[in-house]
Image 1 (cartoon, rainbow, N blue to C red):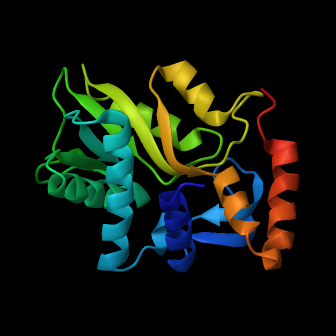
Image 2 (cartoon, rainbow, N blue to C red; image 1 turned 180 degrees about the vertical axis):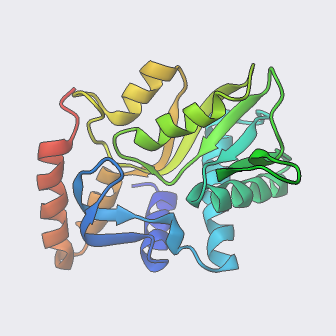
Length: 218
């Protein structure tokens, strides 16, 4: 495993973002581990998270001048921290996020921050994708921006699960909407990391059993 992947998993675990137990995902599936960006609570933690996203962005997209979109609520801090980290790396990109409820006074509208113009590209930053539900919700919201194209999506962890059919959720999103989905790590990286310590045997077994049922078959 690449060292930065191990560092990222260790960071997620230490910050309480990566937890093991019994959880229910947005898709409704019962899962043996959970990725919760809402557990990021300090300036140091959010800065570190943004640095990992910025690294992934520049590895995949180079110097592309896109607009970062962070879906409310967890995506907001990710978009802000990633934009700050990218600016420190010499790439100054704008960012924006949505309101859960449309504001009917003041400046109004559903978006806060920079509003992309026709012809500009957006990069969505999320925490995870399970069955692609959250991405589809984001695309519905972004459909209100005429002439704006989504260039890519970045997430913390690829769960390597089925979407609506037998293919990977990320693959389904890519094929349906025509843009790539990138992750800093995937569930098999987490398994490899856990297997380094025999004390994690139960969690490893539970995750493997879950993937045997919900993992992509193609």
